[in-house]
Image (cartoon, rainbow, N blue to C red):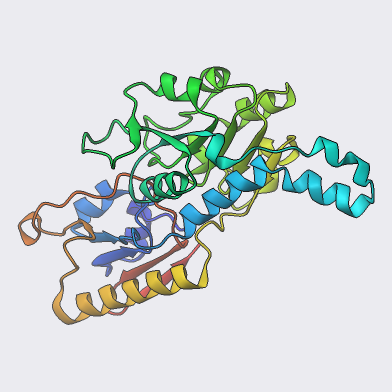
Length: 300
């Protein structure tokens, strides 16, 4: 995706506002924007369930061994059905890392299926909905969860959050889902673990080597469902994001203001009331709209 940093601003000195279509903005150098007096807005996509639905679908895909089932059906060896026993989601204990907007939606969906839900979210101490248990230690979640799902922001402290040590703590037959940022995982360590027979399956929508997922160590690893950063790709979700971005761009052109709930980085601190950004790296469209004298749409 397009990197918005000091060099970008030098090439486009007329830019006054950056509108990020998605709440995750780790491709934006906020220090550079702050120094240049450029404001930043990131979408509030808490009403869009697209990524949470992809996550739930990935869980079911792995739990019910759909990939092997299709191979058996197409191969005509129906006697091999005895190898296709799966698990119900209701019987699983789900560990969610990051209870921002998407993590909260995933938790709600899993609870609707009757699953037990555990959450590790050290970035906020706000109360969790009834039926969801907060764990203070990541190690405890990794050791007891049947499915671990990543929904936290990519920050220096969360880069390779799931590495060799964390993977070793997970159950040998656990599932791992990542619809957040690729760099939350140490992909080399994960590939080694999978080849050693550890973990029953992995579903990943983002890799560190984007836009070349074929270069990821996970590309040739066993028991991996890999999709090309499309968890947010629904017609309804995209329409919601584009409508929001256009409305924000028009508001900026007309008044020089962005909506306080989504304004992450004001050009003048006194312009905006204090507001807390979403805690999760909400999946997004890989587009930015920046306003020089008009609105530019940037594609990766």
